[in-house]
Amino acid sequence: MKSDIKKLWLEDLRSGNYNQTRMTLKEPGHSDVRASYCCLGILCNIYNKQTGGGAWNKAGEFVSQVYCKKDGADLVESDILPDEVRAWSGLSNVNPSLQVGGKYFAVSTLNDGDGDEHFKLSFKEIANLIERQIPG
Image 1 (spheres, rainbow, N blue to C red):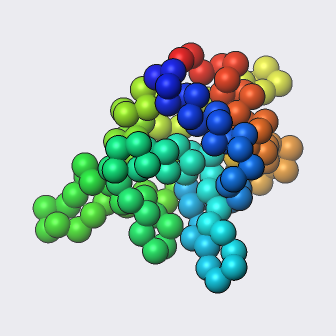
Image 2 (spheres, one colour):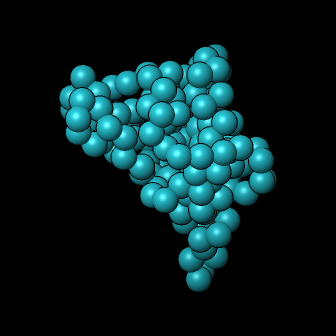
Image 3 (tube, rainbow, N blue to C red):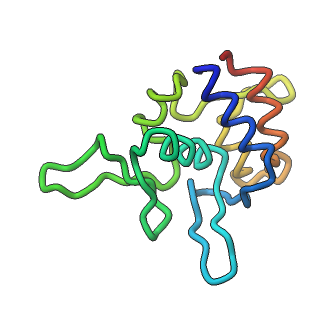
């Protein structure tokens, strides 16, 4: 992973500025409720701020400007890191694996829990794992 992007991601994960959601990149806010993100959604947000690429639609899906269908409809991502963001960040995988307790888990599993409450990690816990295990 590119070191400057990793630094931004770690800072945002630890900032306390993001509500955490599960099973989707972003859950849109409404009235007085802020939007919520998963750890990969935060990376999409950084990509958008840094490059102007991609955007969030009202449903909370990340609209990729690289991938468009022939009829002009956008390809959206709602639960996995778009390859456009992966390539920009220098990650080798759209859902990198991190080691916890001697086993490897996709970062989305650590964010979401996928039915196992033991693995619903906070952004700060995920940031600590990324810092130690993802080169950059």
